[in-house]
Amino acid sequence: MQFTNILLEIESRIATVTFNRPKALNALNQETLLEALACFRELKNNDEVQVVILTGSGTKAFVAGADIAFMRELTPLTARNFAFLGQKVMNTIEGLGKPVIAAVNGFALGGGCELAIACDMRLASDNAKFGQPEVNLGVIPGFAGTQRLPRIIGKGRASELIFTGDMIDAAEAYRIGLVNRVVPQDQLLLACQAIAARIISRGPVAVRLSKEAITNGMEMDLARACAYEADQFALCFASPDQKEGMEAFLEKRTPRFQGK
Ligand code: DAK
Image 1 (cartoon, rainbow, N blue to C red):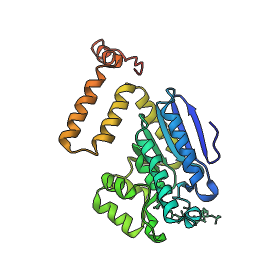
Image 2: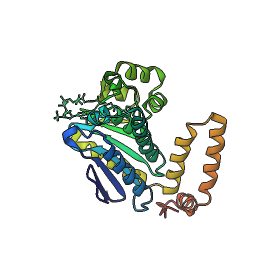
Image 3: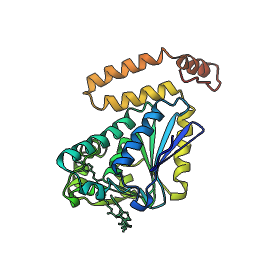
Image 4: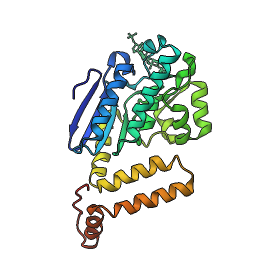
Protein backbone atom coordinates (compact mmCIF):
# COMPACT_ATOMS: atom_id res chain seq x y z
CA MET A 1 0.00 0.00 0.00
CA GLN A 2 1.27 3.47 -0.88
CA PHE A 3 0.51 6.54 1.22
CA THR A 4 1.46 10.20 0.97
CA ASN A 5 1.96 11.00 4.65
CA ILE A 6 2.80 7.59 6.05
CA LEU A 7 5.67 5.21 5.41
CA LEU A 8 5.07 1.50 5.91
CA GLU A 9 7.86 -1.03 6.10
CA ILE A 10 7.45 -4.70 6.89
CA GLU A 11 10.44 -6.80 7.86
CA SER A 12 10.90 -9.88 10.05
CA ARG A 13 7.17 -9.84 10.94
CA ILE A 14 7.47 -6.28 12.28
CA ALA A 15 5.58 -3.47 10.55
CA THR A 16 7.06 -0.01 11.12
CA VAL A 17 4.58 2.79 10.50
CA THR A 18 6.20 6.22 10.23
CA PHE A 19 4.15 9.41 10.27
CA ASN A 20 5.89 11.41 7.60
CA ARG A 21 5.06 15.11 7.39
CA PRO A 22 8.37 16.44 8.72
CA LYS A 23 7.68 20.03 7.63
CA ALA A 24 4.70 20.13 10.01
CA LEU A 25 6.43 17.97 12.66
CA ASN A 26 4.25 15.05 11.50
CA ALA A 27 1.03 16.80 12.59
CA LEU A 28 -2.20 14.94 11.90
CA ASN A 29 -4.49 16.40 9.26
CA GLN A 30 -7.53 14.62 7.88
CA GLU A 31 -5.63 13.03 4.99
CA THR A 32 -3.02 11.59 7.36
CA LEU A 33 -5.67 10.18 9.68
CA LEU A 34 -7.53 8.60 6.76
CA GLU A 35 -4.28 7.04 5.58
CA ALA A 36 -3.48 5.84 9.11
CA LEU A 37 -6.90 4.22 9.34
CA ALA A 38 -6.41 2.41 6.01
CA CYS A 39 -2.89 1.39 7.03
CA PHE A 40 -3.92 -0.07 10.40
CA ARG A 41 -6.89 -1.89 8.87
CA GLU A 42 -4.51 -3.48 6.34
CA LEU A 43 -2.07 -4.45 9.12
CA LYS A 44 -4.87 -5.97 11.16
CA ASN A 45 -5.60 -8.43 8.34
CA ASN A 46 -1.98 -9.05 7.36
CA ASP A 47 -0.98 -12.39 8.90
CA GLU A 48 2.65 -11.76 8.01
CA VAL A 49 2.75 -8.97 10.62
CA GLN A 50 2.93 -9.84 14.31
CA VAL A 51 4.02 -6.58 15.93
CA VAL A 52 3.66 -2.95 14.85
CA ILE A 53 6.00 -0.09 15.74
CA LEU A 54 4.73 3.49 15.35
CA THR A 55 7.10 6.40 15.03
CA GLY A 56 7.57 9.82 13.43
CA SER A 57 9.99 10.80 10.69
CA GLY A 58 13.05 12.88 11.51
CA THR A 59 14.71 13.39 14.87
CA LYS A 60 12.51 16.15 16.27
CA ALA A 61 8.95 14.93 16.47
CA PHE A 62 6.89 11.81 16.95
CA VAL A 63 3.67 13.68 16.14
CA ALA A 64 3.25 17.34 17.20
CA GLY A 65 -0.52 17.01 17.47
CA ALA A 66 -3.51 17.49 15.27
CA ASP A 67 -2.77 19.90 12.43
CA ILE A 68 -3.62 23.34 13.78
CA ALA A 69 -3.89 24.95 10.30
CA PHE A 70 -6.43 22.30 9.37
CA MET A 71 -8.34 22.56 12.67
CA ARG A 72 -8.63 26.35 12.47
CA GLU A 73 -11.14 26.00 9.60
CA LEU A 74 -13.41 23.42 11.28
CA THR A 75 -17.06 24.03 12.07
CA PRO A 76 -18.78 22.29 15.00
CA LEU A 77 -19.99 19.53 12.69
CA THR A 78 -16.71 18.98 10.85
CA ALA A 79 -14.86 19.16 14.19
CA ARG A 80 -17.06 16.36 15.48
CA ASN A 81 -16.29 14.25 12.39
CA PHE A 82 -12.59 14.99 12.79
CA ALA A 83 -12.71 13.89 16.44
CA PHE A 84 -14.55 10.69 15.47
CA LEU A 85 -11.98 9.98 12.73
CA GLY A 86 -9.09 10.39 15.18
CA GLN A 87 -10.86 8.23 17.74
CA LYS A 88 -11.45 5.57 15.08
CA VAL A 89 -7.71 5.49 14.36
CA MET A 90 -6.90 5.08 18.08
CA ASN A 91 -9.60 2.40 18.48
CA THR A 92 -8.24 0.51 15.47
CA ILE A 93 -4.80 0.43 17.12
CA GLU A 94 -6.37 -0.94 20.30
CA GLY A 95 -8.38 -3.51 18.36
CA LEU A 96 -5.53 -4.51 16.04
CA GLY A 97 -5.13 -7.97 17.55
CA LYS A 98 -1.34 -7.52 17.71
CA PRO A 99 0.90 -5.46 19.95
CA VAL A 100 1.63 -1.88 18.93
CA ILE A 101 4.74 -0.18 20.33
CA ALA A 102 5.09 3.61 20.15
CA ALA A 103 8.68 4.68 19.46
CA VAL A 104 8.37 8.27 20.66
CA ASN A 105 11.29 10.02 18.99
CA GLY A 106 10.55 13.66 19.87
CA PHE A 107 7.47 15.81 20.47
CA ALA A 108 4.33 13.81 21.27
CA LEU A 109 1.83 16.59 21.81
CA GLY A 110 -1.96 16.71 21.73
CA GLY A 111 -3.12 14.18 19.15
CA GLY A 112 0.46 12.83 19.09
CA CYS A 113 0.34 12.04 22.79
CA GLU A 114 -3.13 10.55 22.28
CA LEU A 115 -1.74 8.36 19.50
CA ALA A 116 1.10 7.18 21.75
CA ILE A 117 -1.26 6.29 24.61
CA ALA A 118 -3.51 4.26 22.31
CA CYS A 119 -0.49 1.98 21.78
CA ASP A 120 0.20 -0.94 24.10
CA MET A 121 3.50 0.48 25.33
CA ARG A 122 5.74 3.46 24.78
CA LEU A 123 9.50 3.71 24.50
CA ALA A 124 10.91 7.23 24.35
CA SER A 125 14.12 8.75 23.08
CA ASP A 126 15.89 10.98 25.57
CA ASN A 127 14.78 14.12 23.66
CA ALA A 128 11.07 13.17 23.72
CA LYS A 129 8.53 15.61 25.12
CA PHE A 130 4.93 14.83 26.01
CA GLY A 131 1.97 17.12 26.57
CA GLN A 132 -1.68 17.87 25.98
CA PRO A 133 -1.43 21.57 25.03
CA GLU A 134 -5.01 21.87 23.69
CA VAL A 135 -6.06 24.41 26.34
CA ASN A 136 -3.50 26.80 24.83
CA LEU A 137 -5.55 26.66 21.63
CA GLY A 138 -8.92 27.01 23.31
CA VAL A 139 -9.96 23.39 22.84
CA ILE A 140 -9.81 20.13 24.76
CA PRO A 141 -8.17 16.87 23.71
CA GLY A 142 -10.36 15.40 20.97
CA PHE A 143 -8.89 11.98 20.30
CA ALA A 144 -9.85 10.45 23.66
CA GLY A 145 -6.92 11.90 25.64
CA THR A 146 -9.22 12.91 28.50
CA GLN A 147 -10.18 9.24 28.77
CA ARG A 148 -7.01 7.24 28.10
CA LEU A 149 -4.50 9.46 29.90
CA PRO A 150 -6.14 9.18 33.36
CA ARG A 151 -6.39 5.41 32.86
CA ILE A 152 -2.62 5.24 32.31
CA ILE A 153 -1.12 7.83 34.69
CA GLY A 154 -4.04 8.47 37.06
CA LYS A 155 -6.59 11.27 37.32
CA GLY A 156 -4.43 13.77 39.22
CA ARG A 157 -1.44 13.65 36.89
CA ALA A 158 -3.61 13.58 33.77
CA SER A 159 -5.61 16.56 35.05
CA GLU A 160 -2.42 18.52 35.66
CA LEU A 161 -1.14 17.85 32.13
CA ILE A 162 -4.50 18.61 30.50
CA PHE A 163 -5.41 21.70 32.58
CA THR A 164 -1.95 23.33 32.36
CA GLY A 165 -1.02 22.25 28.84
CA ASP A 166 2.55 21.93 30.16
CA MET A 167 5.08 19.70 28.45
CA ILE A 168 7.08 17.08 30.32
CA ASP A 169 10.37 15.55 29.29
CA ALA A 170 11.15 11.87 28.80
CA ALA A 171 12.57 11.42 32.31
CA GLU A 172 9.38 12.79 33.91
CA ALA A 173 7.25 10.70 31.53
CA TYR A 174 9.18 7.65 32.73
CA ARG A 175 8.79 8.66 36.39
CA ILE A 176 5.00 8.90 36.11
CA GLY A 177 4.62 5.67 34.14
CA LEU A 178 3.74 7.22 30.80
CA VAL A 179 6.66 5.45 29.09
CA ASN A 180 8.20 2.05 29.71
CA ARG A 181 11.77 3.04 28.97
CA VAL A 182 13.94 5.96 27.85
CA VAL A 183 16.86 5.30 25.49
CA PRO A 184 19.27 7.41 23.44
CA GLN A 185 17.61 8.48 20.21
CA ASP A 186 19.87 6.43 17.93
CA GLN A 187 18.91 3.28 19.85
CA LEU A 188 15.16 3.84 19.98
CA LEU A 189 14.10 1.73 17.00
CA LEU A 190 16.57 -1.00 17.92
CA ALA A 191 15.13 -1.13 21.45
CA CYS A 192 11.58 -1.37 20.06
CA GLN A 193 12.65 -4.05 17.57
CA ALA A 194 14.27 -6.05 20.38
CA ILE A 195 11.00 -6.06 22.36
CA ALA A 196 9.08 -6.88 19.18
CA ALA A 197 11.38 -9.84 18.49
CA ARG A 198 10.85 -11.17 22.03
CA ILE A 199 7.08 -10.90 21.61
CA ILE A 200 7.26 -12.63 18.21
CA SER A 201 9.12 -15.59 19.74
CA ARG A 202 6.17 -16.23 22.10
CA GLY A 203 2.85 -17.88 21.25
CA PRO A 204 1.04 -15.50 18.85
CA VAL A 205 -2.42 -16.68 19.89
CA ALA A 206 -1.61 -16.14 23.55
CA VAL A 207 -0.19 -12.68 22.82
CA ARG A 208 -3.30 -11.76 20.89
CA LEU A 209 -5.68 -13.03 23.57
CA SER A 210 -3.72 -11.27 26.31
CA LYS A 211 -3.90 -7.95 24.41
CA GLU A 212 -7.66 -8.39 24.16
CA ALA A 213 -7.89 -9.31 27.86
CA ILE A 214 -5.89 -6.23 28.93
CA THR A 215 -7.54 -3.73 26.57
CA ASN A 216 -11.14 -4.86 26.96
CA GLY A 217 -10.81 -5.92 30.59
CA MET A 218 -9.70 -2.43 31.62
CA GLU A 219 -13.13 -1.14 30.57
CA MET A 220 -14.98 -3.61 32.83
CA ASP A 221 -15.44 -3.96 36.58
CA LEU A 222 -13.06 -6.44 38.19
CA ALA A 223 -15.53 -9.33 38.47
CA ARG A 224 -16.56 -9.13 34.82
CA ALA A 225 -12.97 -8.56 33.72
CA CYS A 226 -11.83 -11.69 35.59
CA ALA A 227 -14.64 -13.72 34.00
CA TYR A 228 -13.57 -12.37 30.61
CA GLU A 229 -9.96 -13.31 31.35
CA ALA A 230 -11.09 -16.87 32.21
CA ASP A 231 -12.83 -17.09 28.81
CA GLN A 232 -9.72 -15.84 27.01
CA PHE A 233 -7.63 -18.34 29.01
CA ALA A 234 -10.01 -21.13 28.03
CA LEU A 235 -9.79 -20.11 24.38
CA CYS A 236 -6.02 -20.72 24.45
CA PHE A 237 -6.85 -24.41 24.81
CA ALA A 238 -8.44 -24.36 21.35
CA SER A 239 -5.01 -23.56 19.92
CA PRO A 240 -2.30 -26.11 18.94
CA ASP A 241 0.15 -23.53 20.31
CA GLN A 242 -1.05 -24.29 23.86
CA LYS A 243 -0.26 -27.98 23.41
CA GLU A 244 3.07 -27.20 21.76
CA GLY A 245 4.05 -24.69 24.47
CA MET A 246 3.34 -27.07 27.33
CA GLU A 247 4.84 -30.13 25.62
CA ALA A 248 7.99 -28.16 24.74
CA PHE A 249 8.37 -27.11 28.37
CA LEU A 250 8.00 -30.68 29.61
CA GLU A 251 10.41 -31.96 26.92
CA LYS A 252 12.89 -29.19 27.80
CA ARG A 253 13.01 -27.75 24.28
CA THR A 254 12.13 -24.47 22.57
CA PRO A 255 8.50 -24.37 21.39
CA ARG A 256 7.70 -24.14 17.69
CA PHE A 257 4.57 -22.03 17.64
CA GLN A 258 2.37 -22.00 14.55
CA GLY A 259 0.26 -19.00 15.51
CA LYS A 260 -3.04 -20.85 15.38
N1 DAK B 1 -0.02 21.62 13.40
C1 DAK B 1 0.42 22.22 12.28
N2 DAK B 1 1.69 22.60 12.09
C2 DAK B 1 2.54 22.38 13.09
C3 DAK B 1 2.16 21.77 14.29
C4 DAK B 1 0.81 21.37 14.43
N3 DAK B 1 0.33 20.75 15.50
N4 DAK B 1 3.24 21.71 15.09
C5 DAK B 1 4.26 22.24 14.40
N5 DAK B 1 3.85 22.65 13.20
C6 DAK B 1 4.65 23.31 12.16
C7 DAK B 1 4.97 24.76 12.54
O1 DAK B 1 3.88 25.58 12.20
C8 DAK B 1 6.18 25.01 11.69
O2 DAK B 1 5.78 25.23 10.37
P1 DAK B 1 6.51 26.37 9.45
O3 DAK B 1 6.35 27.64 10.20
O4 DAK B 1 7.94 25.91 9.36
O5 DAK B 1 5.77 26.31 8.14
C9 DAK B 1 6.90 23.67 11.71
O6 DAK B 1 5.92 22.70 12.08
C10 DAK B 1 8.03 23.60 12.75
O7 DAK B 1 7.49 24.01 14.00
P2 DAK B 1 8.13 25.19 14.88
O8 DAK B 1 8.85 26.16 14.01
O9 DAK B 1 7.06 25.69 15.76
O10 DAK B 1 9.21 24.35 15.69
P3 DAK B 1 9.75 24.70 17.17
O11 DAK B 1 10.92 23.79 17.37
O12 DAK B 1 9.96 26.16 17.35
O13 DAK B 1 8.57 24.24 18.14
C11 DAK B 1 6.81 22.80 18.93
C12 DAK B 1 8.18 22.91 18.20
C13 DAK B 1 6.33 21.37 18.83
C14 DAK B 1 7.01 23.17 20.43
C15 DAK B 1 5.82 23.80 18.29
O14 DAK B 1 5.81 23.55 16.88
C16 DAK B 1 4.43 23.64 18.81
O15 DAK B 1 4.09 24.11 19.90
N6 DAK B 1 3.58 23.01 17.96
C17 DAK B 1 2.17 22.89 18.27
C18 DAK B 1 1.99 21.82 19.29
C19 DAK B 1 0.56 21.70 19.67
O16 DAK B 1 -0.06 22.62 20.19
N7 DAK B 1 0.06 20.53 19.40
C20 DAK B 1 -1.23 20.17 19.84
C21 DAK B 1 -2.20 20.48 18.81
S1 DAK B 1 -3.78 20.36 19.52
C22 DAK B 1 -10.48 17.83 18.45
C23 DAK B 1 -9.72 16.98 17.71
C24 DAK B 1 -8.37 16.88 17.98
C25 DAK B 1 -7.79 17.65 18.94
C26 DAK B 1 -8.56 18.53 19.66
C27 DAK B 1 -9.90 18.62 19.45
N8 DAK B 1 -11.86 17.96 18.17
C28 DAK B 1 -12.25 17.92 16.79
C29 DAK B 1 -12.78 18.27 19.18
C30 DAK B 1 -6.37 17.60 19.11
C31 DAK B 1 -5.71 18.74 19.29
C32 DAK B 1 -4.30 18.82 19.21
O17 DAK B 1 -3.56 17.90 18.92
